[in-house]
Length: 240
Image (cartoon, rainbow, N blue to C red; front, side, top):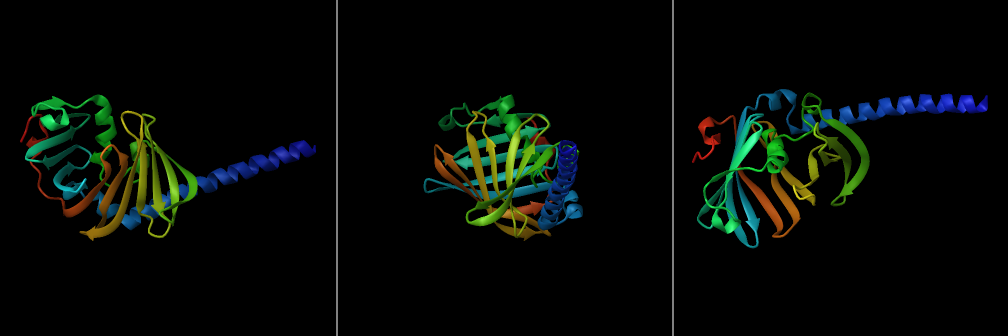
């Protein structure tokens, strides 16, 4: 009899904890969306043009990214007089790599695994925004420190099983760190900071990628244009 009561008590406690857990995840995501600018504001963004500077090994490399939200993305980087281009258009992609990066300078198809890794860039506000509509699962792992600050660690599993870990600052509810494995299975880490508001929406001005062969890569956002016109011909293979 005691065993039965103990089982019943445990089952009830488990049900309540699962409900509270789900509610906590939704509350965190709601606060995160509000911190970015609010669901209505984010839904009104149809395109973005972001100009940034990549700092690596003492060099400053200009970069420009154009996004038609949910559809297409094109990034252009100028390296020592050569241009590197990466494009995602729907579920496929192509790129141009200069000789110094192992390419021929001609347009080539992007490997499927690389497309899979980059397709999230079609959704510039991150995996948590609209996660249910995307078919993602979100789990609250717990509270952890990032650079000495309290954060909420959220595990996000995509429809394809790919796992992304995001850390929300406990004070601002903005993402401070993202972790995900690269195409070769190595763990990758992105740190985001210095958020600033553009047209009522917060964008990180500093992004750091640590642990690569080239050391720490630092991206500094120079300019953001919201709903700027973009010629969709730029996403077709070979377009310049």
